[in-house]
Length: 181
Image (cartoon, helix red, strand yellow):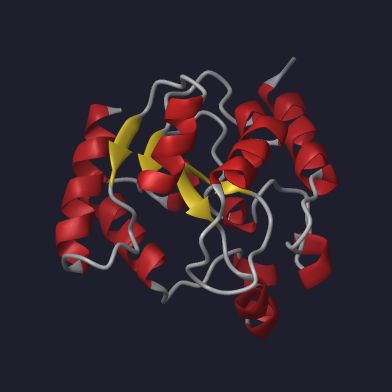
């Protein structure tokens, strides 16, 4: 199977993935030919793979739907500001990397706790099909916990939106993980 065919399979799997209590990208009006909207700019199928907790919550998606339909991300949120700094340090662009969440549904609010069983279900249904032989960089404990559960070799670092450290300090730590990858 080609990388593109494997990716399209993951897109189809994400579209079919449902769990009670969560909304889908289609529910929020931002579904497209990607596994996660952030891949509109960060979807390199052979580039370094970053896996975070989730993409965005349902209310924020609705509130910023027009921007998200065009860019797939909110450029000014902490996650993206830190990741932009990481890319500058590494001499990369967003087109050089692949970002995906461990959880492919939308939560009811920002910083929602996703039960481990729900995160594992999303990995089994979708994320394992996105790996394509890559050793991912787990951004934060939520992603690392799921990857560890499934025995997936990964590099663990902090989440770009962690509530500790400056943007530059977080970018330095994530850059070290990228170099290790």
